[in-house]
Image (cartoon, rainbow, N blue to C red; front, top):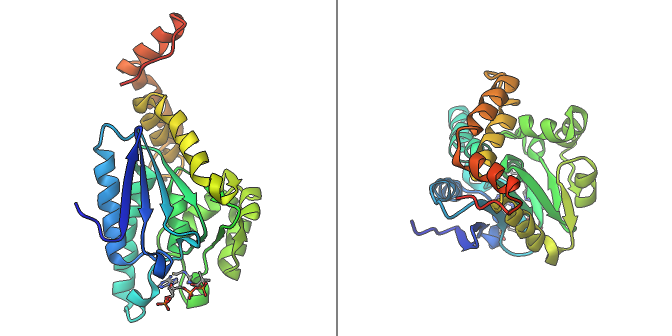
Amino acid sequence: MKFENILIEKSEQIATIIINRPTKLNALNKKTIYELGVAFDELKNDDNTKAIVITGSGSKAFVAGADIAEFSDFDVQQGAELAAEGQDTLFDFVQNLETPVIAAINGFALGGGLELAMAAHFRVASSTAKMGLPEVSLGLIPGYGGTQRLPQLVGKGKALEMILTANMLSAEEALKNGLVNYVTEPEDLLPLCYKLAKKITTNSSSAIAAAIRAVNANYDTDKNGYLVEINEFGNCFGTADFEEGTTAFLEKRRAEFE
Ligand code: COA
């Protein structure tokens, strides 16, 4: 599919999605959310993509939130639909994607932008990044999973402080609170993300998918994560990657996964 608001680059089994509306600080309008959903779905089915990095174009913003201009005249029903559709097509989809997604936060990650970064499997921030959920300053609350994922990452007290004050965290504060895993100089952001992604591509894709399912089960009230782990662990023993991984170890060579 030809995209209008995103760019996709591929190199050495790593795909990069660039959200490309710099004049609107990469704000997520409906079309961008749709295109991102399609892009992630396409990459999910691409056997040659083993890790995905998502970032924003320009140096100012990752994503400055959902597009406020687009929903300013919505009613209750339209508001609920906006959140439900977005969660389903993009945010939950990314969280449950079995190809790891790293968010490279290159600037403002606000509202839906931080929610998208939090749906990714982990986050790296540029020292210039600023992160927050400012929805209450607009008479709203986060609608793309932010009230759930932020407490999971930073704890309930810090999450409520951020949501209720609408304050932004600096990159260093985000690092201290566990919201991001690393802070880099702006020019080192993508190289570090690619280094982490490259390491991921050397591991077993089937085991990585199982690990993501098991970790996510902890946050799914319908599932017992320990039981999911037992089943996923057991299933690994039936995979070609398990055979290759253990054989390579015993033969003192590097495993070559499919
Ligand atoms: N939705 C729609 N448009 C947005 C946007 C958003 N979330 N965030 C920024 N933009 C647009 C601005 O309207 C402006 O467009 P214009 O040039 O056509 O007027 C352009 O992006 C640049 O933004 P601007 O506000 O001029 O930049 P700034 O450097 O003065 O401020 C921010 C940067 C991020 C502090 C400010 O843009 C902002 O507060 N954005 C909204 C953040 C937010 O509340 N997000 C949650 C939404 S639920």
